[in-house]
Length: 148
Length: 148
Image (tube, rainbow over all chains, first blue to last red; front, side, top):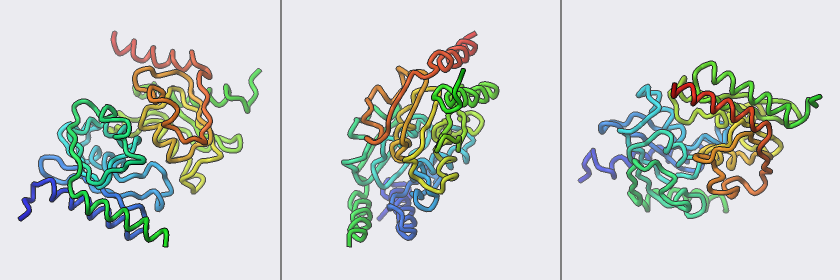
């Protein structure tokens, strides 16, 4: 039985965001920001809809979380995101001083871990692989359908 | 005499944006995006005003340029920015496929060149050092005043 406070529960919420992206024919990546066990921001990739290369789920979620808190620093927050962030999003996580980052699927091509955890702020805790298969299947299904 | 089409002319326009940041007590960094010799986007750092760690001049300028063109890809564009972009902004430049990047002052601590040009898209041309002293003096003056 899931605890509502578990990483799995929160990653499921990020996966729901990714499904919204899928429904809009966007690359299915979703992110949420949690503070004091509450979800304060939800976002999904909208690069096609907005025609804005910066509209990754993580950036949108960071902006929304900062607006919610009235603070550009997110020390006490955790981001759950279905895919390993890219360099751009890792940089945004750095500047926001995100307290903790949890991602699901890895991104061997574009993920920030190709450059190492050093891209994150030293105070940002990192975990990955939470709901890995569900996160990865969403993406592989999306790209497989594109190739058909 | 300046040519209105020179890199120096356009960097002067980016410096004007940086001055707007300075007037608002923001770290003075300005950026413009040029397409077909026309300035299609102007922005300056607004991380304090917006309380959003992602509100760097470059990200705001990319979003504005994409909105102007109705395209997330900026192949035919040049960004002029007064300071070497950080990792986040280099990632945004990558995703936008910026045609050319010209920056003024270097950022030895946080600049993307610490990781090398590889962070930019292979098709992005790169130049730097244009109006270097004017760009650097703005920043050093800002931080010197903060320490007083």
